[in-house]
Length: 534
Image 1 (cartoon, rainbow, N blue to C red):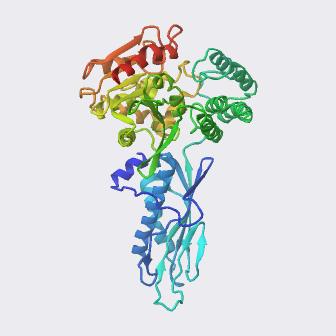
Image 2: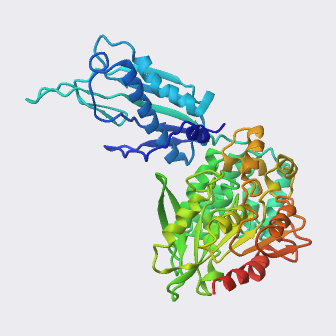
Image 3: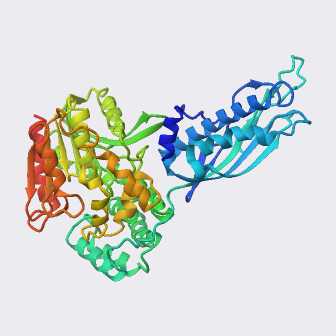
């Protein structure tokens, strides 16, 4: 069972993390390790062994553990991304004779095991802090007890898990899920760049040749390094657009798969911000508060339309919100704005994929309704590939706030079955690493866990298919090897009538030689969106 589900079963609702009280931060992540600053239980009066019992200390240690869990969730988006709690340091303010520090700190340790199971079992130190002096421990202030200030003594017990070290589920996957050998991957990468095909769309063919000449293995960090070298060269020349594209390919298919891809993603975001400053109309970066964290999104509005209708764009499994907002021109020239955010489990999204994760999109809609320059009554959501699922979900859950939903790539039921997933792992439509990419949005760590996770997401299992919905456009190819075409027909045959476009010769998202991505967007998707925003 996942940590998030255990938390719900325990009836625990985490509060927002308390802010640091001095010159430090709540957490620092390096590689796949997350270091937490210390937390205390608040101004609890008394010392262990004097005014406070072991049981009281145990409960205060548990409250400290909850504060630490809140920090982890805020930093990672989900407790399910923790693969192991490594080390816990607890300090107990007790009398010189008090020796039951381990029993007190069990309050925190037991909580971690309750929430994380065996992953919560950790190495630990439980020590007595005598108080009496004003000191700092890893950024945590340990308050004094009994200072002689001319006032009445106020003993304060400070008990803190002052250093928690957690291993984060972002360990490297070897690019062994294929379906290509090293030489095949090099050839296919160059071919796609030459033909402007995903995920190399926008990449110069000569850049692809340069990167592939330097690629020595299928390890994810090797791929990231080869493309990052190209990105750095463009950055030095001030070509921020090509730098962003190169770093974006370097982190592909997910920045969650290795430290090198995480670094490449950070560079991609930096380069994109530089590129965005050159655009007119400008791209506005939004930070929307959400469950103790934030939704990072982009907004770009046409120059002369107020209030402007809006396309609510969601990236797919391996694309990112930067790609969504970069393709806004077709809408902007028609007086339509574009809002873009990362789907759960990708990019800067604050949560992973799970049933109910659509609340993130509802929160974004709430925010957009506060912006007077946006016509909140004219919004169409556009999903692509994996996020076609979220567009369909929103068509049901937000039907009264949407003019329509584009489900471009339809995976809503059979897609989540173990049988389909096993079959799809061998697809050659996907450049490489389809399983690690898909597992990363769930935060699962094994094949069995991954295969068991997906079925809960089925819209049939969730009882949505017969409900009333906003208008939908369903788009895909009959020969899609990544998402079953049966899901499109299942969605079409249930509930309200829908508009459907299927390319009989098309693969994923309906693309083919005659119908490349750009043509499908320009002749099918964008006209439908514009017609529903009138």
